[in-house]
Image (cartoon, rainbow, N blue to C red; front, side, top):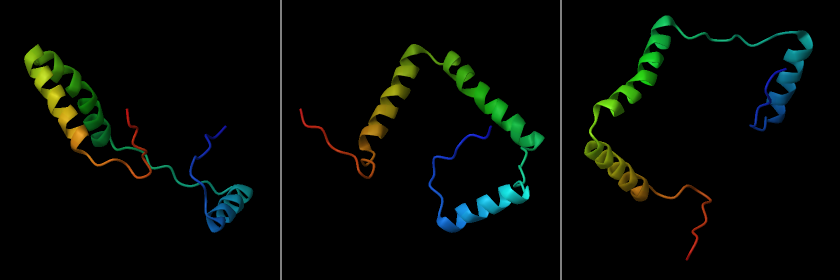
Length: 84
């Protein structure tokens, strides 16, 4: 069974999807190239090996830098500020 899309379709898109499904036309699936898969695998390994190479003080400095960046970022649209 296909996973359902959480995005609402435009009426024209919905009509096309219904026609495609009824006629048996399936959209082409784009496969990742070997180069893309290798890059992704390296990226997944990279974070773990980088963290194991850092000292606790360096990890703390990186964490503090991330906190500062998140606090400086503007609030997302529709966010409600909670006052304490």
